[in-house]
Length: 215
Image (cartoon, rainbow, N blue to C red):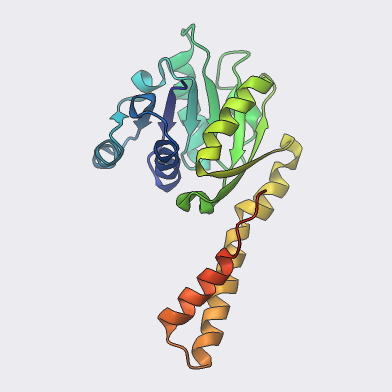
């Protein structure tokens, strides 16, 4: 049993919660921490999970996933550090933010805190993401394995060194935008050939899906 706290209830945070619930994670093992109360209530009701404050949500969590905008990560992790600094329970702090190195998180947490960095992509919104994960200075293999299992709930996962994360961001993080451009061009070309736009869109998206291949 792994207790998971998701900090941030935006599209990425919700995608992870949805994936975890679909993969069989018990509702009692997931908590969402979202500052906007209507959104917090919406997620709690939709997925039958607890919505609470950061201090309460992080207490006793095995994995704390930071799913906020990159610019908000330092301040949020600073608060997480305060919340778990006196805890005897070891929590793995996971960042889903692009461009934020593990050292930034480690500097906000107690010495020796395990940190794992994840670069997901927007395909996780439909459970078909490809996420790259790397461990920080104090994270051990078992920490990494636990995070990999969490991220597998929304797609495939690869393990890389942190020095390769910028390349990952360029390929899989930004890559979906290029596929969108390609699909749009295919649709426009089909419409020029006389196909209705809704039919062209269905053909283009079906072609993009193709045959599922294991990563």
